[in-house]
Length: 179
Image (cartoon, rainbow, N blue to C red; front, side, top):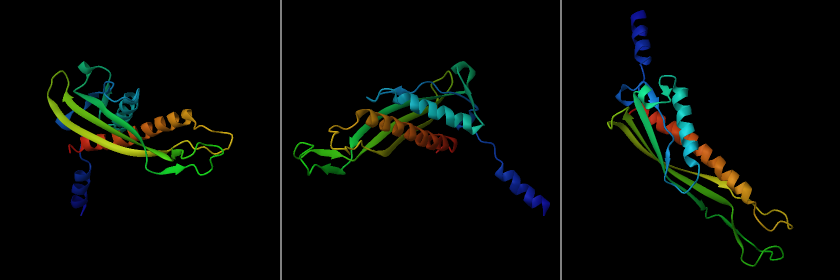
């Protein structure tokens, strides 16, 4: 009986590696090909957090110290008003037929490439696209006749931060599974 349970224990405690049996990784700042300034920092930091959280891969600062290099590219960040809209019925406070969006959708596309350090050998490649919505600033008081653009920018940045965490967790998991 003990030998059977011992085998099951051994099967469940497998050693985890990145593709190519990479155990140390350098993650340079992602490239940003989108029009969204600073988006690359959210995704780079989120990927570094996932690698550090894994506890089976060491994150190095220099390519010469690492076995692999994980390069990322933010290919696009699209922010569009969702189809849910409010039309002004009371024209005392807004122009006739004013249309306001009630939420925005942020869609981000990322490309990741894991290559052997100091070579061009690609060990793994993945593309990820994800969408998340946030509420638009709303006009709530009759004396306020404009939406708060600072709130809108802040909400968009928070959504990008949330997306980066979700996407990089999924990307790291897929890379570990070599899928």
